[in-house]
Image (cartoon, rainbow, N blue to C red):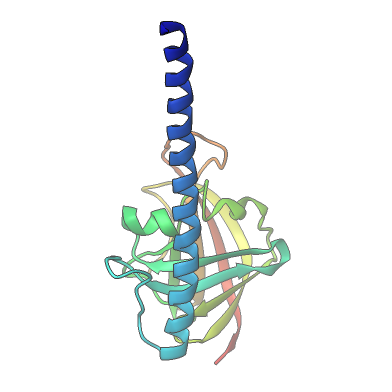
Amino acid sequence: MPRFIFPLVLALIGLVLLGDGAYIHAKAWLAQVLLERAFDRSVATGEAVKPWSWADTWPVARIEVKRIGASAIVLEGTSGQALAFGPGHVHQTADAGERGIAVYAAHRDTHFRFLRNVAIGDVIDVTRRDGQHFRYRADASAVVRFDASGIEATTQGFELILATCWPFDAVTPGPERYILHATLIGADR
């Protein structure tokens, strides 16, 4: 009898782990569906629409790099909860399409994983929740310390920064950040 208990316990543990992994993936998939729906409703109404009733954030933009098939819904703020579901719009930075620098930050291993494939010269499309669409061209990138980004908040230009941790393939946190800079090249208002 004891000889059958050990395999049974291992099988039960395996089922629990499999179920937990499936739950996490299902939750992530559902969150993206709800974010897309909230963004589409925001564009239709011009109002901030939370993706679920208890959310502490809401979609403010969609960014796309069509050359590589990348797209992400940007959320307001960069709290840990917001960054778990998508890139965040850094507080006190401009909105996309406005004078100044709009800064979006996300995790390197999830929502900004695609940054490793963005090349200088690529077009980055940003659609705000009010339906306005802006096109930026990636024109520079840099690796900087988190406390020395070199981002000039008082710029008079129309700029976009996408920021994530560096290096892309690291498994532990580090002090370096990858900064992709882009300049506004067009708008559909």
